[in-house]
Length: 150
Image: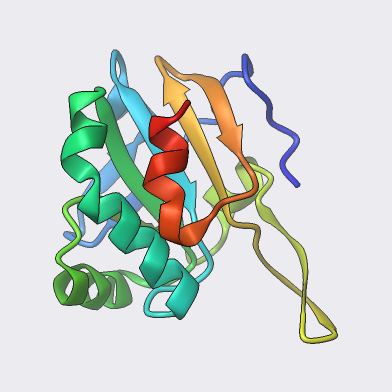
């Protein structure tokens, strides 16, 4: 579980998106950012979450949000994920987990009786570099509604 809470400064980050462009926290100065961390492209839960955000993208934008997803997948996998599901937002490749660790979302997980390290599905709503809200109990199919309800 992340150590970050509302009111904390958002850790600075820099990553490469599916278009091989550098994305930094400072790019969103004066804007509202949905920064969501998810385990892996093309998996059922992550696909449902991305599609939820895609389908409500206009509503999120109307509320002033930019959307950026982060996972340990490489740029090439993000390119396929974005193309297959027509995702209108950026996905950052965090292969070395630097961003995930800074946000406290790289940790122990349990699945089918085994423990392993992975991304703890978490979303941060950030405004002017300050964390406004943290969603730790992400409902993949209804994730956009969770954000819009904040």
